[in-house]
Image (cartoon, rainbow, N blue to C red; front, side):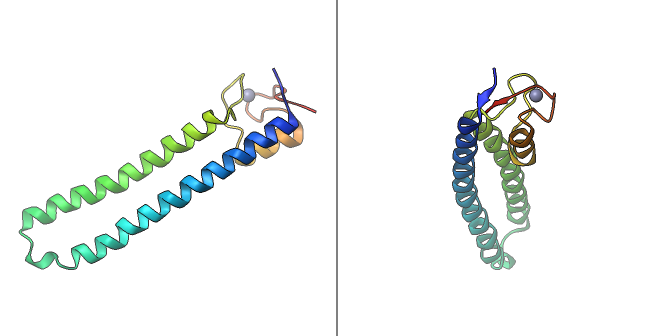
Length: 116
Ligand SMILES: [Zn+2]
């Protein structure tokens, strides 16, 4: 069932707003931890070598968790704003969303997803 163009554009606007808010908070936390790590490890000469190994695992665990959290949050926001093609599940955000608006069809399966 195709969605009205105005409703689709409103969903995209709300998605961008939520995504920008999330990205801002995420980047603030990410860079705080990143620069905090520089300050923290500058004092690591006095640490026992086991503590350095543990910190390395914790820090790279944090980096990997950031990748996972970013992926999951994007997936959550897309589905929360119903920006998935109902036929094939293609995410209708970014370039795919612009193609959908321009052609009224899903760029993944070619089915009509938007009505005028
Ligand atoms: Zn599709």
